[in-house]
Amino acid sequence: MVTDSPVHSSSSEDFAAFLDVELDSKSSGSSSNAEKAGNEHHSDSVASSSPDEEEAEDDDSELENKRVKRSKVETAEIVEDDRGATSIASLEQNSKASSSKEICTHPGSFGTMCIVCGKMLDEESGVTFGYIHKGLRLGNDEIVRLRNTDIKNLLCHKKLYLILDLDHTLLNSTQLMHMTPDEEYLKSQTDSLQDVSKGSLFMLSFMHMMTKLRPFVRTFLKEASQMFEMYIYTMGDRAYALEMAKLLDPGREYFNAKVISRDDGTQRHQKGLDVVLGQESAVLILDDTENAWMKHKDNLILMERYHFFASSCHQFGFNCKSLSELKSDENESEGALASILKVLRKIHHIFFEESEENLEGRDVRQVLKTVRKDVLEGCKIVFSRVFPTQFPADNHHLWRMAEQLGATCSTELDTSVTHVVSKDAGTEKSRWALKHNKFLVHPGWIEATNYFWQKQPEESFSVNQTKNE
Amino acid sequence: MQLHPRFFGRNLRENIVSKLMKDVEGTCSGRHGFVVAITGIENIGKGLIRDGTGFVTFPVKYQCVVFRPFKGEILEAVVTMVNKMGFFAEAGPVQIFVSNHLIPDDMEFQSGDMPNYTTSDGSVKIQKDSEVRLKIIGTRVDATEIFCIGTIKDDFLGVINDPANA
Ligand SMILES: [Mg+2]
Ligand SMILES: [Zn+2]
Image (tube, rainbow over all chains, first blue to last red; front, side, top):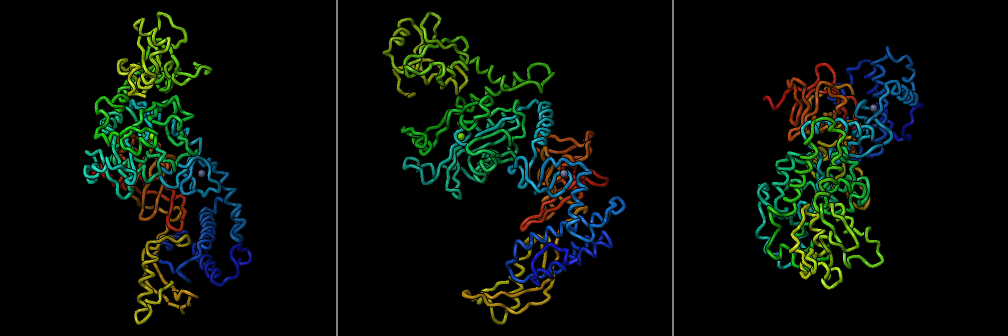
């Protein structure tokens, strides 16, 4: 028996451990109930307080084999080949052979064990879902299966998925050390952490941070949760993400086990829907960073950045005073979140408005496109000195943005033109616009229209104004 | 058991025992499982002085109650999280996952603020804080944690106490 053993050197300590295990397994061979005994009393020999971890691992796999043996003994009638009792090596082969009989596809794992058959899996495959529970992984087929069953359930409840970014979308955070003298006053105005449900400015001294929730965010989440199953997806780390989730969702109604952080992504600097258990055709994303979603731009509603703190403005190269320094804030009822909520309502309504038939065949990305195309419907836009001369105009992001919003873009002036977009009131086309009573607007007009999903008042973007530069 | 010289003296034995309890109780050993409580000291061997530090290592043989779930064992556990993949439950230090493959087919997942698995007639419901009886079909004991795969797809398994009806 001992010569067969693949374990350890001749150290007497290890040998003692081996005997220990062997004794244990012999006693269990006689009765399957002996397993229970292991739970009650066990003598342990510890040689020093720093037990060798590797040794423990070895012993564990040994136990594992032994357990296979036990279960074999229990089912001795079924398993005809019982030579395993004499050699650990052959036991291992047996266990593999018997697993192939059961044909489990091992759809996922928890603590490296198959979630269906409980077998220890050698290889880790599939995608980690650490944000749901530590040690959980799912294979691709299982993800597809879960998405398929989930979407049915969700559509029955007239809901879609909504993925929400944190920073600059739902809130703004700053390091305390980056606060400017003009922001010092905030430190005396923070809301209590005891009941965060009413507050919007929080000092998180243990993280050396201050966080400001975007105006309207609580109403937004409440209303959106009626139409969507919501996830948080941030490039911040998990500790930060969970802390923010607590502020946004103190009752844990919205984001329970649906907080995805950069620790969970499968690609660096990218956000992906592969870790989201939702079908892509039913997912909308709110994020201020378009580049994070290279593969899912059709799902994305780009958010205007919320810069409350000075550090945030500086980080993005704005040299103006921040909202905090001006003791001001975004408008609660007409700000970005309120506008986007209207858009979400519209999309949700269109998606579900027709008969209940073929809900699964619908694609929210198409709806998003259609709704976007309504925004500048009927506008004909000519750009003047917005693009570099040699630049292919129809490739410029403003040109494409205007087209996605439903406008027609042209390089030629004629009577059907409604808007001339320029930074300079002195260009030939700009002067033509003024002469023919057409709108002359700053390029910021298109960007703002894009953020708010609504044609912005042209007067606020007249070319003489420098406000929006 | 490694001890600082300041613990030496008349109370050496007590000091060793109390340090052993502090260090070992509540921890997990891959070989034996979760150490619940030390019940007795068999013997304490000769100390070995560590060069340079003055620390002394004593070999201690002790008995303890350990908790280690085994394959095939029936356990009662409290549900900690329910989602579309199944549910997670805890039995003391043990983390158990019951995937929806191993939940009876007549129980269906319901999403919402209180996600749950419910039978079509609504008579049985598994949600957070429900107590369930489950069968262990796989275990993995780590240095610090015990993971288990469980099933409730068998006779006499499932909810034993539903907080919603309590
Ligand atoms: Mg962001
Ligand atoms: Zn399996």
